[in-house]
Length: 290
Ligand code: NDP
Image 1 (cartoon, rainbow, N blue to C red):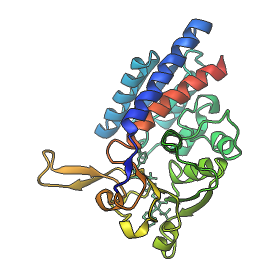
Image 2 (cartoon, rainbow, N blue to C red):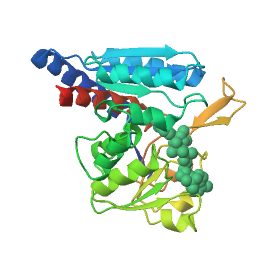
Image 3 (cartoon, rainbow, N blue to C red):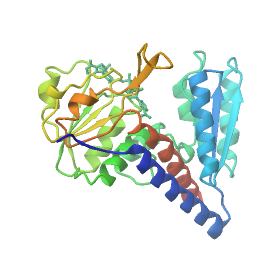
């Protein structure tokens, strides 16, 4: 029997509705409207699309969503000064500088400048540490946090499960590992130097793929009955598609679906959760500041 689909669009919709309810409650009880400010440096078209969808999502949830656009040649000092102003602004609860920033700007300097209490992306080392030690006041990066919600709402038992995370990036693989460990999974992290990868992935009850390689995970790498979460978003050429390409994940969906018990599709799985969790983090930031 093919695996049950974990519907990220539906779960993200639930989260957004819960966020809207929490934002309305905060306004009613304390007169606070949660506010997210996104800073976009330069004109990268993909980033512009992401930023516009974040602003729209904020407004739909009854929150303040503002985008500050800076020219591509903005000096790093000017960007840091802007972050200082946003850190001091009581109406701003979440600050997000859209990555990647232009080459002359050091992304780590930007991340370090954002007040940890407003770092709703969860990239500041203070938040990385808080999440790692299981301190609930920390903000976890939105994509792995979204994966945890998908697992929970799909009724997947994480405690005691053997989880394998494919990928060790700072934005997905590593925070995914810490969230799974804190949820009492037994976690193995794989990367490009892992030997005999398939033998490791075949031990997974929960397999999270975040490597950025189209359809890399094949059915022979998956234990029958495993839960497979595909974080990958890859563009592959497809002359039959209207745009000349199609999106696919890091998992060979059609064949893995025949082996797994539950699986996320791409698109429509993990992707929609990221913005929903960003909104959730922003409301939490507002609640914690209040
Ligand atoms: P990175 O490129 O930063 O990291 C990729 C990781 O995969 C690295 O740890 C790398 O190992 C590992 N890796 C690469 N090739 C192999 C291989 N052949 N075998 C084993 N491990 C390998 O990617 P990200 O974490 O930023 O993103 C991963 C995917 O998730 C991408 O497709 C991206 O588009 C998607 N993504 C989706 C999001 C969403 O909202 N749904 C958000 C963020 C990312 P090593 O460290 O040794 O180099």
